[in-house]
Length: 347
Figure 1 (cartoon, one colour):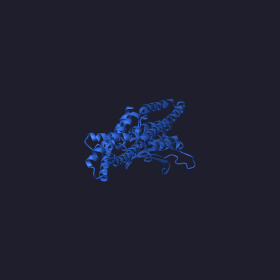
Figure 2 (figure 1 turned 120 degrees about the horizontal axis):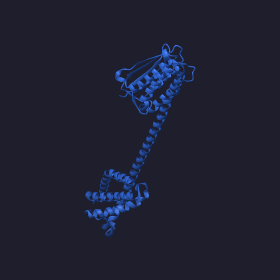
Figure 3 (figure 1 turned 60 degrees about the vertical axis):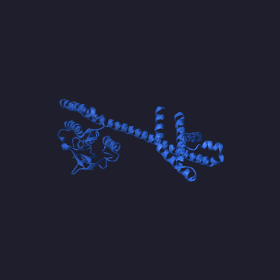
Figure 4 (figure 1 turned 90 degrees about the vertical axis):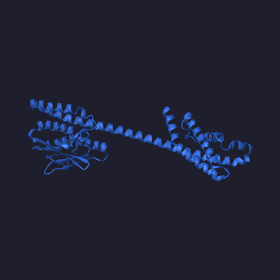
């Protein structure tokens, strides 16, 4: 209730300049209609009537809610404000219209009729104005609620997509450990230590909305080190990133799915394995990240080579950047795939 009363009072205060302008226009109009009346007299009377009607509506708003939402309330506030305005104007030294009307109605009825008509039109004008203000305020509230709901939905979808990417890597690594334990327990122990380091470093980062490129590269390096143990000589990798770009900000887990895709669809199926290269450069206002492999290359007959990882990357780009970021997959020469990610550059 207090917030509503404060809003009503603020709205009325904002409309005071308009009220003063309307009162002045009414005074000028009355002076032009009847040259026997003085402008200063009409200014006092019109302002007294206008402010009395304004105060009546303000009081009704405070007591009964939004007085301007129901047109019939003008039938109460307008005559009350008119009578009170005439009395106040007489007290301030203007013509006593009520006394003239009572003692010489033939002299005052025309002026009073004009005042009643103008007051009615002015009240109708302010009713329309207040209704428009209220409708705009309600529309703004609805838009804000819709934006907040959309933001909450987007945040929930991003959390869901990121939660899908994290176990994707874990499941692959655990499967590799399971197969390695039987063949080489010592090497499995080393891989497990790399995995522990990876999880310890990523525990906080993966719950954040952004991270530095250096942090993302550290985790990708751990991922490649784990897979190099598993694949041996079939995998080699190279990371080329200018030092000036290592502080660039990006959402977490965007680069990792590109590397996983290169491993799963490029290096692993190739008999001789291959090389994975990671390149980062700034192109205009965008940060360009490339994951290049020399593996099997694109299979045009396969229904999809992206899997859940790249599909989630595309979805996250859509939610986070709204068309300002892209992910493209193209063939490499002489073999392999180039996955290129472009996002707006941020320090």
